[in-house]
Every structure is written in structure tokens, then in C-alpha cells.
Length: 212
Image (cartoon, rainbow, N blue to C red; front, top):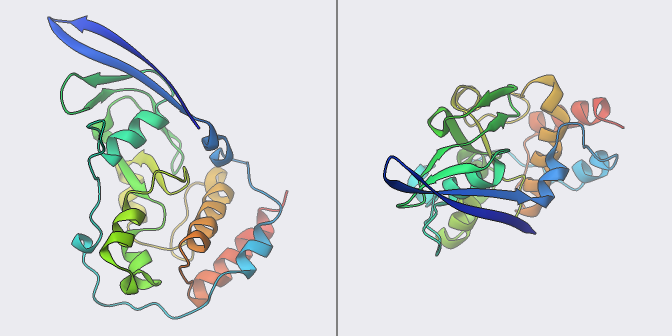
């Protein structure tokens, strides 16, 4: 469920739109909100070797423009700003807001300092089963706004440190690890993506630490 409010303001002779979006399901993605059922969820994951070849980012058309003129990236920025975001009068360009990067705990007011991360990276998805998908399904994965866990606005530095690594290779700051692992497992299950043995072992270790 989305809630939003919009205000129009004038600054230096230019019209801007102030928009604030509240995405209620994001409450589930707050640090510390990890369910006790993480272990049973992990048990449902398919285990298989990763493909490892053939990936190209262009195979996942991303940052689609939606009917309201906003791209998928802009929609995530609008949804995750904790203050009213300043939006330009053209092309739904987000100019400023307040974003908390859960990966490293940094706050930013400039969207240029942020990346919108695919929590399960596109290459990771490819290697875990998306190589067999149609381009339509890969596009849906790359632009998934239906699940607030799928895409997250984080600092560019933390996103680039993560790159296409899985939880056996990279984790966010300790305060975000349980939320992150829960999101990872949910996404893999939702899209019927497999995990490799090292990834599975890391998820099981983290699940023990994340019991509430």
C-alpha cells in the first residue's frame, strides 16, 4: 500500500514538486525486524552450482519508465526518502531528499551519492537460474517494485563494495545483516532462484545468529 502527498513550490522562478511517499511494507525491512522463521525458509531453497558464464547486464532491461514518467530508480528514491523529496518539474528527476543507507549507516541528502541496488544482483540472479528466463521475466526482476526488499537505495560506495557478491562473500554492517539475509532468502524463493553450497552454508550460519 502506498501513501503519498504532493506539494508544488516555486524556487528561483522554477516550479518544483515536493513529493513524499510512505511504503508501508518497508516496515518489514527495518533493521532488527527479522522473523524467527528464517531457518525454515532457508530449507526451502534449491541448491545448485552457479552457471558462471554468459551474463550481460543488457539481458536485464532495467530502470523502466513508468506511466507517471518516473523511472524505477526514481520511484525507489521517492519511496525511501524519509523527508519530502524535491522533484524537478521535468522527467521526474529527484533533486534532493533524505536517505539512510542501511548497508553502511550513512545518511545522504543528494541522490547523486546513491545507487539503487538489486539486493540479489543481476549477475547473481543470472547464475542462479535467470539464464533460463525470458527477457520479459528478467525485466520484471530488474524493475521489481512489488516487493520493498528487492531494490534499496544505498550509498554508492557500499553498493560497489557489494558488487555481485552473495552473502558468503559480502555482508553489510552488522546492524543490517539479519534484515539483509532475510531479504536475500525471500527474493531467491520468490523468483525460484537457487543457492550454491557455500552460499547456503553462510545463510545457515547467519540464521543462527539472527534468531529472535
